[in-house]
Image 1 (tube, each protein chain N blue to C red):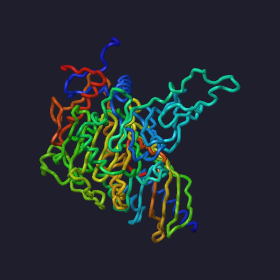
Image 2: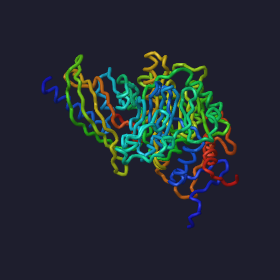
Image 3: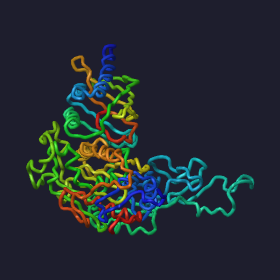
Image 4: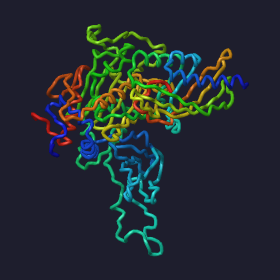
Length: 417
Length: 156
């Protein structure tokens, strides 16, 4: 075997075949960090509502790079790699807080809220001995800064000078959906975290796969909430890298047993002893009751009935990632509405009635391996060829949109292209 | 409180853990009064004054629904839980309910026979006596292990 032999093959130009090795290969993972997460993409960092006051900060991740995001004294937003320019130690160890500056505890190098180095102890030594060289310029040793833009209170950052403006990157279907979700001030309700032992792209696939919703998430089926035959679909941006999957309860287009003829579904008429969990309180000028907005590469915004949350994907090597969930409501929610959102949080997250299966699905997909270079997954539900908006839920075509853009950034040339 | 009540509280907490570990979840429901609260909340949310939970049952019917859904609907990692509960303390009595805390650790074992620490935290209980039988009026599980490994299916 020569060292130049490809580690995996990409036999389909429309990405109807994805090499399983792409979910396991550690060299590919390192390239993803450089070309995707630190490449010309915009990564979701946090919500402005989490850092409302000057000096408020949170520590987050872009891929596996630690990032400190804060609000400056003038109210502007800044993000920088949370790694000291001196010896590479973590500068801000806390997960959140408020500060006038950030000081690394190791040797007390101090940075302002823009990430600029403003102080080194004993810079000039003691009595003329020791200290930094005279020509040491603080300006050359700031924290590594990200470009930051906020859209509707959602903070994104990029490592790239070449990334297109955020609004163009997001494109209309995504900005319109964020307009909808972020139409008034937010109130943060809390956080959930989940360690999943699988490749992060199995998750970005999962959220671009409306087809699995009515097949894996049996709570929805058994309690009669959802069917694949419901009204719904998926909207994509012009590059098909982002995706909004949506559906609405009470819109079943096709009722009958025939759609599940080939499956053993068991009883699909279970009743909750306390159905208050399921009540949808109408709050948007459309009929969508469930939407999963996935923005390339690192985030998801969900509306599951009246439960609203963001999910930040934090990679930890090819075999593990963390999902960091931030739940919110609106600042003008009354106590009843807040309690309702908290109640409906039961449906999402690591213990969610509708989402706990995703953790298991990703782990079984990862556990079965597939590092051989000629083993591929099949992505043909919803058709082959060009990826377009989908007007039904029996589709996984948006997965192919993700991979087409992924391959472009990674300089991967599929066959037949 | 008398010694009998104290022993009954100890037994309740041990039985609660044993019934989860032996998968007797339907019988486990009997440890709660109808008008109960059961919640699992990450310590980091408590510390920030944020109300979001990982699991919230505002009455026994919602607990019944959780168990029924685990049996009938949800798909989750095949595992065995084992609770270690320690340091049970009774802090007093408020509105007829004993305020009780205890530390817990839950180890989870998979089909390969490999065990991991799944969750560590503190139980904050309100326990009432109903006809001499102790039951949970409220059980708040404050989870140190905020980053849930894989997923959270079985109650803690």
